[in-house]
Image 1 (cartoon, rainbow, N blue to C red):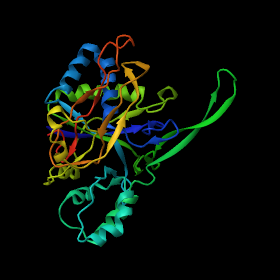
Image 2 (image 1 turned 90 degrees about the vertical axis):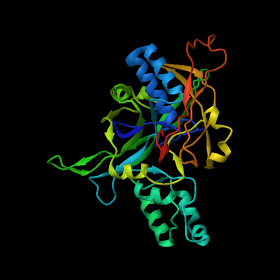
Image 3 (image 1 turned 60 degrees about the vertical axis):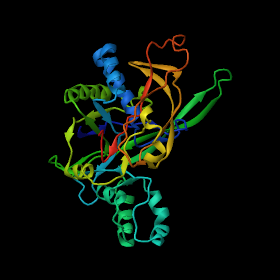
Image 4 (image 1 turned 180 degrees about the vertical axis):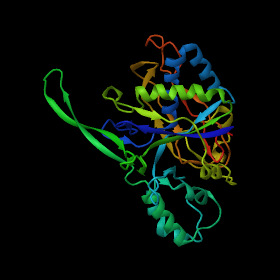
Length: 350
């Protein structure tokens, strides 16, 4: 399968909900299951229910035509502001070190890192031992390169009780990404920030169709609070992988890091304990959105392996059925799925 990259430039604030918390907190990234569901809904608006059903059947099969990673931040390079650099999720395994004392000394600093600079990713999951100086430089580089890319704002909201008419003030969180800065002649002085994603595909016919779905999604919004105009973005198209990403995908290692959430296929479950080296789980839940319609009906909860988990094998994953019980009584006319397809680095979609 081939892999490409794409960048989303947001026109205003976004709200991606923090798992297990209400509107008071927001995330700066979007998990792959939410992105895939949003694209399927945009696709249904674009091509109708029959073509959407074919798309879901394709993704449900043993060899899906495309797999999406989660969306992660990108922004201006620290040393050269006119260039962009992508933040790569930190693997939850420890990096190789020359001795245990080095790991004990820097353990807390390493765990505070959410993202790695791309040049550090291969070394983190590699086997060559890193000295104390190399670990320190990695922490300094990866701990500060994303600073200033986004800001969180807490917007005041008022809730009014229906019976007593009493009001209470609460805060709704949103994320603002840094805008691009140019000089008087239009030359880029400092690049803007936003979110990037990776697409692994086996059939190029999907590229134009997915690009159209992304453009519809950009006009309707991504994430929550779209009623207030949040989540609007510009889509710049699918781009060939830059050289530093090609080197990451060509890394020779027996470790594979999830860049997506993952739900094991039935054939993978028996050996899953032996396949995963380090992992963390997250509960995925929320309301059902079907095409243009948002329902006040919650889908079934499901636990998935989260981004940054590490596998010794190149796993595939699958879609998981989260349709509520008795869907006909609830007015639901089709199955509801969440994508647990694995996007691995290196590996992509195999």
